[in-house]
Amino acid sequence: MFKSLIKSQQRQEAFSGYLFMFPTLLILGVFLVLPILFSIFLATHRVQILGEVSYRFVGLRNLTRSTADPRVGIALRNTLEYVLIVVPVQTILALALALILDLKIRGKSWFRVIFFMPTVTSAAVLTLIFMWIYNSNGLLNNLLEKVGLPTYNWLGDPNVALKSIMIMNIWSTAPFFMVIYLAALQDIPTYLYEAAKLDGANEMDRLWNITLPLLKPVTFFIVVMGIIGTFQLFDQSYIFSGGSGGPNNATLTFVLLIYQYAFKNLDIGYAAALALVLALIIMLVTAIQRRLFKDEKAN
Image (cartoon, rainbow, N blue to C red):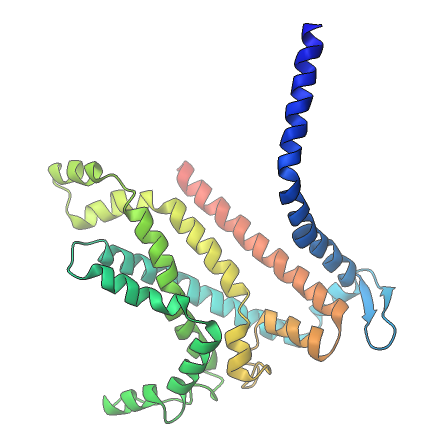
């Protein structure tokens, strides 16, 4: 009798728990699980959307087609170059800004607001402002000319076009990560620094042996977010090149390529297959990074 009462109570608690979770599960199912399943479905079909919509099963043909597509190689190379340069630079810059603003300097609240302003500005507006700055007769070339440095065709030269987007992205995203680092810095107990100071540790010793190790979980989060964000580069590249990925495919990123196949060529099945490839690449890079951080922590 007593056991049956306990089981009945446990069932009621479980039912109440699932009832509370139901709205979240419903939202996740509709907006996360179903789109993933539908993407997999599209990736294995040839989709005809003009006229009567039809689906023809092609198996893995869309995925194997991507291995012979030269534009996939170009987009992947551009995206990897972008990730490998932007993520480390924006992380180091964010940390440096956070360390500076964590010091007892006058007007640091104003500096925090000023540094954070690019993050709250629309990416499209920022891109248009930078297009004006990067113009052949724009602000940047005028400044370079005045100090005797060479000028560039920032928007039209394939050798510097992607770098132009990198500079803009680093400038606009580093302040967001700076705020996260700043919050983490203020959570580090001050007695650790005081104890290290009593033991004769200088500023650099305290940075290397206290600050950076304690910031490692935050750094992992920032690097993961940075990798995901940079792999998904689309809007700046689209506006800079007018959707073409030019000049000479220099700003053609993987997401822009997916967009071109999906909405310009109307090749939905192949675009979905490329989206799956991108998702797998991001998951693989994140898993490697997680493994590296875990190994370092274990050591």
